[in-house]
Length: 215
Image (cartoon, rainbow, N blue to C red; front, top):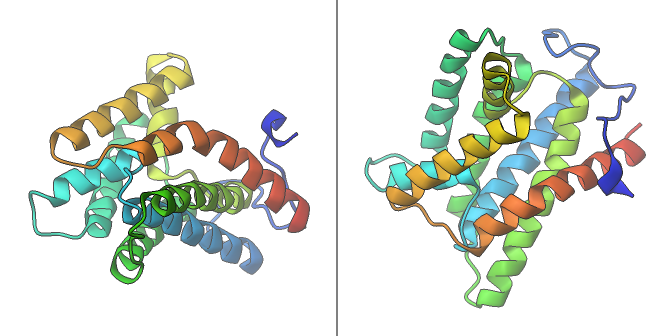
């Protein structure tokens, strides 16, 4: 059962260490593929108009008050989070930087070129597909092992500094950003709940699929 997965699979194309600035071409390709899927999933969730992931709710809320796209704001949020790593003794890898760039780009591409279904049922279906695509992208990205994403690094850095359980730290971050985003006008709805409860199993499924099919 994919829900019992406890370790990220190691494949022939996995980087031996996160801070590897000369990865194999295949490793780099799968990293970019994974981040493209991840950004597409985040974008589809926004397009569905059923809600968004917590950090996208924050970006959406900010976008209502300044004249920048949600993708560009997502990029600036990622840069700010990476800046906070300085105080947490975290070091960004290739995956960290590309995470900020590719996901932001794909969110704007999705919002520009993909239409929202008119029927609410199909909006929910789109939201479910979005979460599954995020999970698949996470499978490629995590197995590539080229550095944590900005938010993941913030989570692990805060955990080391505070010595609090990682689940508590993650929950604090997610609840904080979604609350701020909602206050600023970001969309919180069924899609947000689908992401919150579905992304864990989806990532586990993504790890299983990528681990089995991409040797």
